[in-house]
Amino acid sequence: MPERTTSAREVARRLGVSHTAIQKAERVGRITREPDGSWDIDRVRRDMTETARPGGSPLAPPMEATALGRLTIARLALRVEAQRLALDRSKGRLMDIAAADARIDEIAGAMRDAVLNWPARVSGQIAAQIGAEPHLVQTLLQEHVAVLLNDMADRFEGRAAPR
Image 1: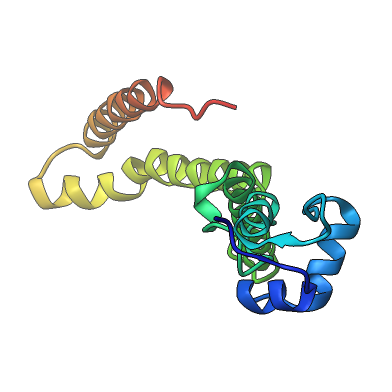
Image 2: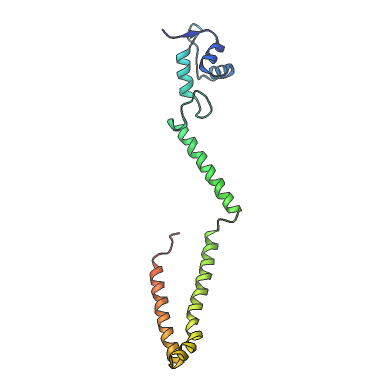
């Protein structure tokens, strides 16, 4: 036989919730009294558990046990991630992709120019060390540098990041 009581305070005490929680749950229709006006404690416990907001009631099942709980956890995780990104942005740890692309292009252009100018700068020194004609050394270095740069351009051409 189900355990019954006529006192809402007794129901609250047995369930481990406040008297006002029982009153509020009855007022909004989460729980109801028996036709004789008494409370069936097992039915009240079951109804309160089924309608409890995850994380908001001692009777609620664990957050991950219900669809609402999983959605609540996912929403919280998204909010935390957004806050982390905002913090990283404010501390300068994140950079706009257009700005990053522009900076990479600037650095790559400077490196390309330095490599292209290198044969003219060192060909005289190399020619003196090996006893060769400076113009021939410069021409050979420029040809090999051009091949190297073309190979690198071909290698990176297919690796552009999708936008």
